[in-house]
Length: 278
Image (cartoon, rainbow, N blue to C red; front, side, top):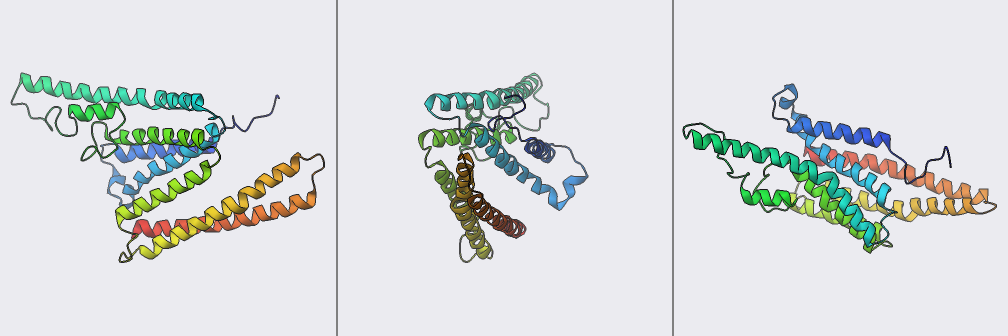
């Protein structure tokens, strides 16, 4: 109806602004120009804006497509849309890098005494590395470091994580929340293992355990109290004569749970700050 906006088409303008700000800060972090912020100790933390961008993009994708991926055809369409959004610009930038290497090669053959910062198509710009970049595979530990357009590793990861999201939603619609929760916990454990913080000898081990407890309790509250209360209110409101007593009781549960989750989110920020600062 006119004047109404469906949930599916709702746009989170505040999140768009946050994503845009995160992207600009990532550009500032990568741009090879010296400026006053480069010398600041906190400047290196701008790399975590990539994590922020990923988290916000994941929420937006889940909101926009979580209810639309009902079968394999929709899943393939989603995969094609993600490829069309990420791959063409990646190829344009990759083509520019190839053109630079070709130019270096031409000048080097024309004048062997010409000093270059690196050999044409050398390490980081080798033909095999070009193949993996074309296939969005450069982020899967196939090389010793970043290759060709280094920051494009994030686009490759985003693409394949989007495919994983679509596969879970299409193949396991009834258990997708549990699977996503399990994937998040597994990713956290893998990162902790890589950093060594899950070892009892590590000085930050206690903080890591505390973070796992907090996240686990938050998951239990969200899935066991917050979400059921929200759904129950919606069902009650759909009745011809909703019971205000039931709605009041459910909303109290919802508000109390949301308040506890808010406090625990603050605790999570404190723990993450401690882990980041050492």
